[in-house]
Image (cartoon, rainbow, N blue to C red; front, side, top):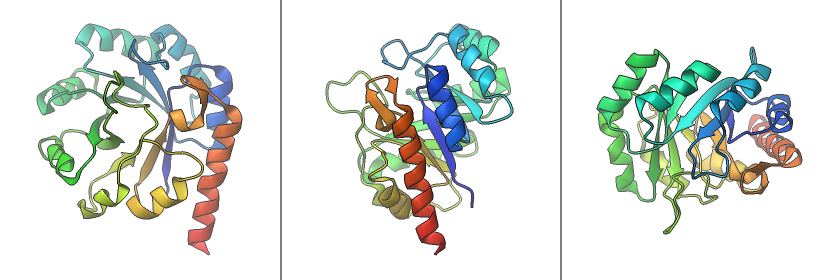
Amino acid sequence: MTLDIKICGLKTPEAVAAALNGGASHIGFIFFPKSPRNILPSEAAKLRREATGGAKAVAVTVDADDATLDAIVAAMQPDMLQLHGSESPERVAEVKARYRLPVMKAFAIREAGDLHSIGPYRGIADRFLFDAKAPVGSELPGGNGVAFDWMLLAALDPEIDYMLSGGLNATNIGRALSEARPRGIDISSGVESAPGIKDARLIEGFFRAVRAHQGERAA
């Protein structure tokens, strides 16, 4: 099974190049003013063009209204939308119908019971993303650099397609892949030198760690 790898929160050509050179299957652009990774649709459009024919471009929003999504989709023409807020199943269905794009719905996880919330979204969202619940006081639903207990995912129906996110880095990715066995992983703060500042060397190191783990498993 091929592992999808999404580098999220990209803002510069150098970061996009590092993600593509490493073999990212997806690159994410965040449209959320409170985030240090926030980007304008026009800027994301320029960076997205550099990935045409390579990684899939994902537009990440948090409880965005139609006008906001209209502007993002028109400007950057993403391959996928990621809804990282409290969007209801009905809202996810509306977004899919309006833009005719696949939608990935994010969920915040801390304990086993948090996984029950995905039920109403099955058959509506095209993919799930499991991130750690934000620390107390954080205004960001993701990108906080914290992880949850990956073993919680062992009880999931194996047919559920999800990306694992939250606190991933080159040091722990091998353990994360062994415990959660996701079909995709999503990393943002784990390849940054400071909040919102992607580091090409950290991106390269992350991909090396993923390949090393895959090589060990193959052996």
